[in-house]
Image 1 (cartoon, rainbow, N blue to C red):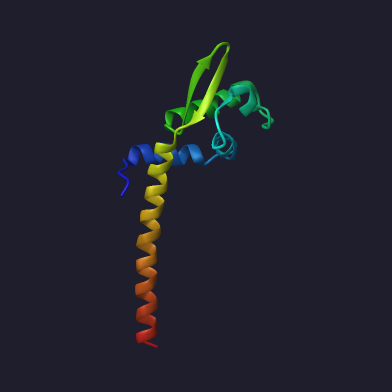
Image 2: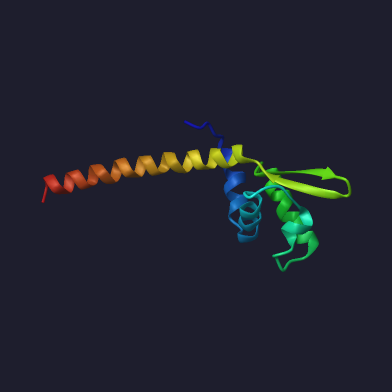
Length: 109
């Protein structure tokens, strides 16, 4: 089971709540790229993109490094695994509860 902290999960899910940030992560899932490349499909200002990237970085979902004059971004899979682990735990819990309800309803028509 994946260990997680409530604070880190709050940051991760808060970061994932915005469609631009989800789009950025979807692009990063296929490999590293520059900030300029990440900004291209979004119709927002450069400061807005920077803010989205900062939120993703603070949540631990991506990182940036300098390569010459460019800033290159990459996804950080470990934090995504923590969020996935929490979701899987919730899924298992609700599956057990729904199975128990189904069993009860079959036994008590």
